[in-house]
Length: 398
Image (cartoon, rainbow, N blue to C red; front, side, top):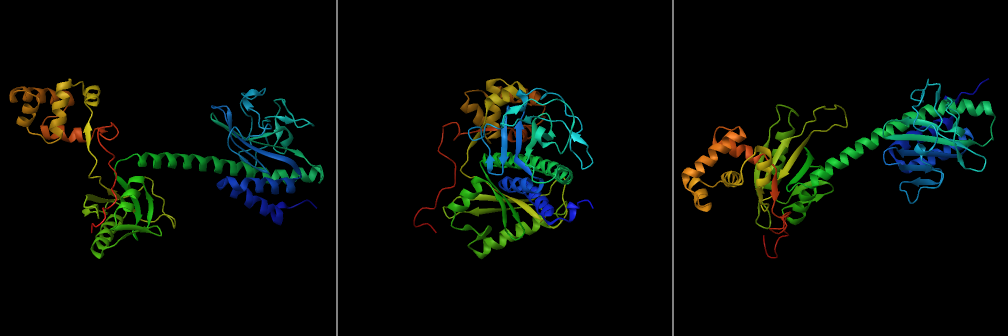
């Protein structure tokens, strides 16, 4: 009778561990240890190699994970430095039915890495190395040696059942890394904004807050975060926040509404609060997708000005035209601009007329609206003013 690993308790424990390791790198050494014992594989090694940067992103053995060049052991060679490394892979173990993979390297008896022939090996040929995934950016490689504690036929059958799970797990891990990286970049971008951003559920539970929003709540004794929930210390403000969120999450689509409120902090600063629906362009329905809204906290201390260089590069405005446009966007009247720039009102009108033509606008209101959409220069970042961050309430303030 042949083996039936699918009903083997050790097999299921190993498979569970493999998929757990795809979501949590810290679980990979334990998964490799179970793999080593179940398949009689000595020194199992898992490597994610960055082909563009020419260094290992991750190396794993049953003894631990290595994530930087200083700690990566000598057994992690550069696949790009080995013969045949640039040759395209043949049939890889992308599916359980795949017959083989292209070998990456072979381990000699003394542990040194030697070049392997470009022959196609069965996915059970860990001694020659298996490429679980390969694309233009990375190789995901796995290798090991035969420990000889079970028969060769038994080991082959066990590897044939287990290796497809490693392939699927590697793809899951790759996708998880990609999504995590994109999410980290997106959140880092939100931290550079000079206003607060919060994502909340209808029950005021905060799913995300950028650095400015966190700083504002910490500095304002009227608000607090308790167990991840945004709370107002007055019943009136609490009712306002709930009403704004209810309006934004109701319908979760076109029926949802935005709302706003002018909040006065404990330090006396006016902070406009805007709550708007937050609906993904590709909504995922299910028990994990909860209604949410985005709350924006305006920064009343932030003072930004349009950059004349931006207007010049975008629209070809002269320096004088850029300055007049910036003053117009700041709310100055035609006569005020003429006085400040030592020009006649007629000359200012001529500059505005030329600016309208160059920007493709037809009225001053259209020009102002356009200018308010353009990138600005924060005076703090330019070293002109002090940091525009929420201030802690002064002692004795209400």
